Image (cartoon, rainbow, N blue to C red; front, side, top):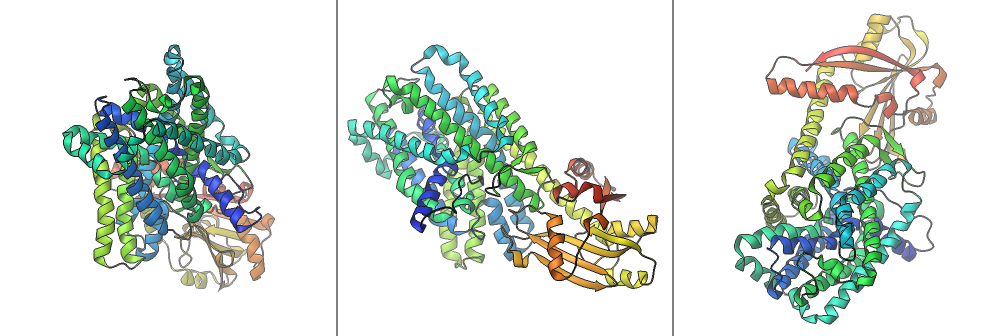
Length: 628
């Protein structure tokens, strides 16, 4: 998911210091998810393997984890996918928009982007639950009597995380990078101790150990791949957060600290398993730590999982804003929580919905072991969809020939499908949960996309060309003041303008047709923001362009029009918007259901006036009914 930036990168002394600061900032935003995966990955893999903690099994697990991190994260995402940026922005919706520049509104590409976003929302509900539970479960080793209270403690922590979201994380967020730096150094130090005690685990760097385990353990070996994949569930964040930090700081942080510390920790966990230092039910991660230090380690792990959860939630907010701007989601109230960065936003509906889902999963599954069955399938499917879009990017954006495109993207697709299939083996044990959530969200997003397109098409059929209208009203009486009509096209007459003239017999002295267009780029340059045209007879049209990462502000746009000799007195300006009632035309029951669903979302969407920051006391709403 796209996370929100938490550090100000502009106030640095030199380019080198700037890169270093951004690399540290990336540790607190980009790597929270993948950085806390050692808490549950090896433990889950051993559990799904039947608990047979033999040296061959431990080395096989370690080899699979190492090469999953290398192939999926280092080669695929860091080495290739991060080059497919949309003017610096990454993530599946940004990739969808990048391909949209080439293909326009291609239904297949939009569907893949919407489905990928829906799957990531499902992952966003599970990640905080499994991360916090796995951290707090570490208390069971030094304090076995606390076991019944793990779930209530996790609920309290998660309530605090979600409850504090409206306040933003601007100030405390500056500590995320340094704290995660301490976390990675700590887990690396713990792992190094295990490796020094049993250096033979380094043999697992040979991929033959992993392949041997897979091909000698039948179906169990295949199932274990689903658990192994948990080590890479945060890989999508490396791509999604490019816009906040840039590719270079993310790569520096990955190769310079994150990957070495992860590999050391996983190797150390394999060492304690081989030595038998971890009990049958113990988590090898916490078994690496001396007993006296386990409680402080649990505290540090809990803080790290809170940071990871914060990054996931912020990513959901940012992805929601992208989805709204790209026409995949109804308008929602978006609050800016800090003046330091546009990425620091809060979306109340998303926050409370995620909280309800996360708490439900925490209470229903009750342990990280149970949740592991539901975790991973959503991310593996998203990675598969990203690989499909990457094939189109290789062909259409990078201009690769067919053979290398198929060879590279096809290899990634094969790896992704293997992990998807392995995760699907746990479908009935919890894997269905993120799939059901994603299916519901995709239905909502696609219904909104189709319904919005149908409404716009219907409205355009019910109007007439603007030049003809201007000729027809020439010489008719006009009332003082200015009228601004929001419209999707500036070459036809907005329906509210026709209704105002038909029912109220009113035509203002100055009439402005205002179209807000979302570009397939993250941000629009100020000099390209506004296109103003004089249409004659004091009719004007303005097309204002925003990127999918930007929030529209119409009063600011009108102020900018003054530079082009078109000024507005806000006290003499009225904004006319349509308030439509959506009805279903004749069709199948499925069609009627989707129309009713779209109508429900349309009624509950944030009013356009509020979304576009239009003063409410200057708004006139004109009702109408439309059948689709």
